[in-house]
Image 1 (cartoon, helix red, strand yellow):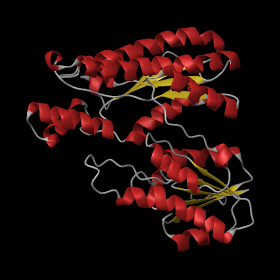
Image 2 (cartoon, rainbow, N blue to C red; image 1 turned 90 degrees about the vertical axis):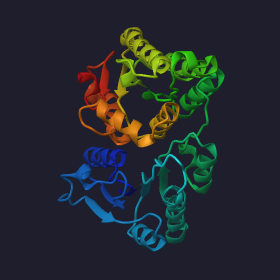
Image 3 (tube, rainbow, N blue to C red; image 1 turned 45 degrees about the vertical axis):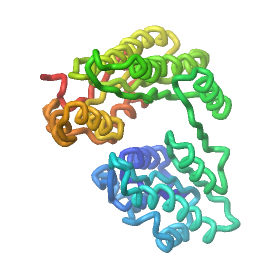
Length: 350
């Protein structure tokens, strides 16, 4: 079998490529990546001399190039290519649209033109809270829709959470890994903090974790294997100015995770957490912007303060935090449960 991977030089794509070539020694792979954003050839070191691996620098939004790739004859296409919208003002969506929407469309068009009567499997790995964007991608997929699961879910509503978890299990027959990642942040001094904002923090960060695990745990207990990973925060371990309410919910998540690990150990299910430090995501950008406004200083000043909390002098990239989550999801972490990986750039060493 020959597969084509687009965006395979990012963290998730590169890990998939390493795993695929190790798992299937008789198969080959073509990797196409533009080498922007997360794309880095260092992620694929050691593969350049493999006769089963070919790297081509390319753009999935280029129709001629994609048609040429598909013409080489592939049995499956897996698309990891994506641009992340880290600009907090959302003023320049061109790159996001080009890669995530038009790039996916271009791949599908290349398949349709080159192999109109041939069944080629196409899997787009994508998650988003924007249902409209997910549906646009889903509608472009001509074959294999039965292997794509898409849902918009409010973690503060147990009925919605349970339905999604039940639907996933009904579709796939099991749940190997559950990552509890939904979260919100609000900042401010206690005397200025509204009850509504604190309710939001509790409902999303604490009850959302509880609801998600509550819905999935019966399946884990019945199948007697799997792993649950909660995404907590460095705020689980320390206090932060203007973050008393937020810290309380994240510390609660950490305690919840450790206690759940005890309950699930007899069933062969591991439960661990990852505590990120300052990570360059829209959530942190929003947090910094709100704090800057409240204190009457610039965004960059607050950002520098966050960067100086750790010993590395910078924010983490999301891909760096993903390494910890992926590690806990694999058998490499088979002897870990009730543990927390603190990925904070040295913040808690001070």
